[in-house]
Length: 430
Image 1 (cartoon, one colour):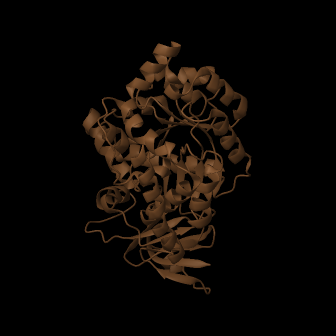
Image 2: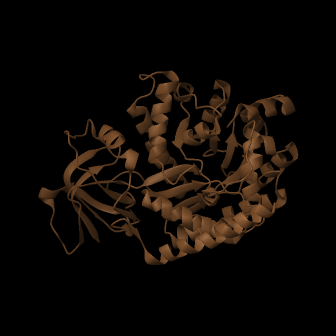
Image 3: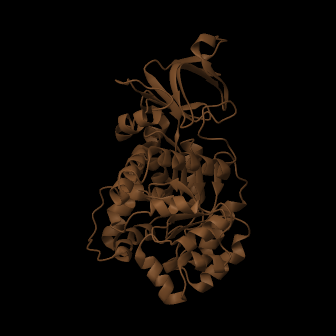
């Protein structure tokens, strides 16, 4: 058993000063230091530090880690051209060695940013079969993170192999560290024949799909099928409860009502949207719809706190400073924890008895008063812009110690460079 002592505690629900937390895999006791009795615990002194639940990414692309610093001929005129000139070239070359080592590299970077749970949307053209197991081995088995994985079925790939990879991974018994969803790329790369095949394979599993990430996606669907994207997915019976609709920038109120009816979540990825110049979520419409909104980063970085900042500032730029509050952002963060908890069958996101001991400690010396009413404002404006935890725990096990990862993981991280170099060389060959 471990004990964090002399800690400031904040978990988006409560703030406690000068407190302790006792835990092994789960949290067993929380209280004020005046009540603390050392019963032989491993003591970790958190004087001058804030203790928070570790972080969750609601939508990402682990393989994009290997695009960092990559230079390819790139003059896109629209969103599809961005995919064709960069991302589809990369994912077409990925094999399972690259999948594994991109998982290692991403995991190390995530952990150093306080992220311990990732919901990933994967694609790899050279090796489809076994790709999700390669990711799981890197992320969950070796880096000890929690992950939810799927393969993005697309007509760009061997569709039958895509279906089988999703089916095979979903057939593995889920654990609190790993589970699956049924992946689809986007409406514009999924024919009617493919969606019918997905329906035959899907059963009651939730899907994870990009939808309305750009206006081009909606226009393509209306031109080809005479309906909007969410209506198309609904017509095929694919919107099972717990599905993730990533982006949904151009989903209208009728589409959002369908998502609400089927208990689907929208994963917003504001930094990526701004980078691609495709627009911003309609925050007001999302709030009015009552659809659960979770926060992803679309693989653009190894951070999630930068997403929190960009959501807040983008919403203010879009509709004015009173249109979106810290409480609105706080709800999205809580909803992301709750969604991941449901997918993994474990309690995440609170520092309370019975919750998983997925925790982080981060130095913070507030220069102004901090209390339960303003703690989130302190964290938002005082920490999120440079969020580097000193220690990170997953299920009670310390995976970051004084900012350092475990030596065996650091060694694997160095080997990732060789795998990335091989990918880049393959891309140069065309």
